Image (cartoon, rainbow, N blue to C red; front, side, top):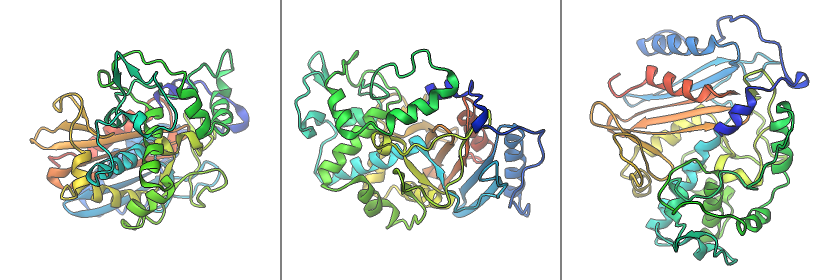
Length: 378
């Protein structure tokens, strides 16, 4: 979503914007009773001093215990403090659910990571290869497919006013169906051998989700419930769809304070349309920390790059830590929300940060914020 952030920094649409005031200490439920409380307070207060910030929920697993902290508000028009049950778009962190499901399908012997994706497509796509090398399921999950980041793969904006870009995206993608995506796949021209270059790709993640639906003969919404939300008791985690927005969903804004559309588009559901809470995402972190689960362990295996620099597993970034362990992470950014999740299996710890504001710097600042609060040496 970084491309979108470059556009959002220019947005000034008055009808969707709120005036920004000088920084006043953000409301919080932090009780300031422990060293961790104080560390979170210092770190998050610095993050919230940016006048564009609205609210943030922080979930931490540290030394086997869970902690929740909330700051700011769920919307500029209500000043209601978030809670552990406030719902945020988690954007691209959504991709990790599809990737974990792929790992399960491999263990269930339903698929092989090196399968040509065309084995699972109903139409012929001779174009989905380069120099005779096809796109594989692994390529979809480790960002090396070479597919366009977005479909349709064309200029949607022309000379449009930058103020209108998020709303153009919303108007296009609310009408862009699964059938449209399969149709436009016929026109894709790969520019590199699959497996040679890793880059963010919404199209690959969405296509993987559609393939998982075909493999398991069920909708991704049901698969999410069967394998994640029900067994993990994630009671406030949803696959967003038009007309089905959660009641506790926070309002999301860009860096100018403009209210942003929600990504509830069919063509990005498996790539970016899960919404969840800090409380539920702590349960997901605990699930991902348990590498006795074979599917979890498989999804964490590096498949591209070097772990000392940051390798890619199945939609996870894997990197060595200074103490010899691993950090496993993913960022998320939608039109109005930013998120970051990182965990450390060797120290059984992790942190998730959910913010209802998105500009070109927010994701990086969440990464820095997570590092200040929780590292393997803390």
